[in-house]
Length: 472
Image 1 (cartoon, rainbow, N blue to C red):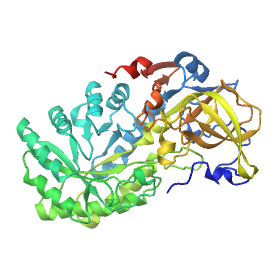
Image 2 (cartoon, rainbow, N blue to C red):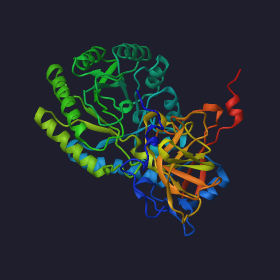
Image 3 (cartoon, rainbow, N blue to C red):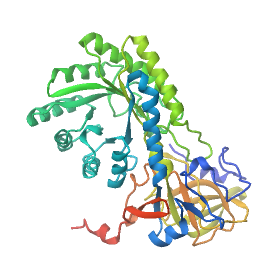
Image 4 (tube, one colour):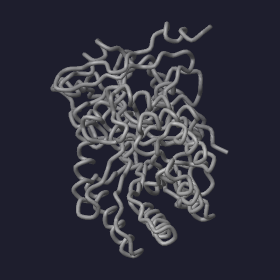
């Protein structure tokens, strides 16, 4: 049973979590939290890609998701380059799949297409975006634990390069669709390897008691391989897939996962006389949402994963298959911040004599539900000006009719914040717009891409007309 969100605040003298330190300069930016072009101009106003947030707010309104295009594409290119170089001697390189579920729109899919990445989709809607953007089918993978017949047919018809199968029922459905369309559908088997990733329960995906994949321990994964091979030529088995979770900061879990899944890879070679050509190790690499987090750079991740794969393949006496990875939020997350306008500032006196300052902004859980859903931590800064006021422990909250409508649980912000000030929350590029809602009939914010002094809308702001459009 979760404690009430305000419970800790009733302790006398509460000073926030242990990792949160009072800043010497309340205007300072912790660079690891922000996109590469974000900084303050001489007047203290936050700017991204050469455009000030005051100009962005005036032109596009608030709240708004603001994407540093050069940062996004630079992170994507770094993953492609680094994994290609480090895995080149082992298996001719590695493929990097961008997670559409983190954030996807037509323009983002075009960036992914043009910058040499592959794309993971997990619904018919995400596939439709990829098709609209002209993403080649061969560079698309389709996930999902309960793909509909229509989604499977669309994937086969478009020539999706890999369908990650997740159940025995899906194997039979996919084989029937491929036979009817006269195709051979390429598949990977999603394997539940029994690794407990050190992350939130809801984003850990490789322990036994969850909905994804075929269990390695019970033999279901090996049985899935046998059933797929029995459906040849309508199904073509490419390899195995594992994914241990999300927001992960070290490679220890991948080491255990790779060891277990490569044993199955070797078992398939022994029992069926085939060495599968591909292996997907998943990803879910963590990013810095606060000063508490210290993510590994792509070069370190790639080098450690390559060493693990090489060692385990040697131990099992098999060649290294073509490796693919899924960086997840590590590309989109740090590239974006959300820009809000302050509406109210309220001091609340608590039991025991402690005080809490609540700063309410014009968004909230409709544009960032991660705090409510995952108990996630975020940071924030006063964005529209500099301040010489003392830092005060603050909770940034939204405008929705929920006590759990919290954007940033704890942050030191200047004492002189008032209505009309701009606040920026970094690290909102992944799973914020993607998980957004119209709760309380609130139109969703736009997504604004900024580069080289130019800003443009890539997803427009919803309107009240949009909210009413589906009503019959």
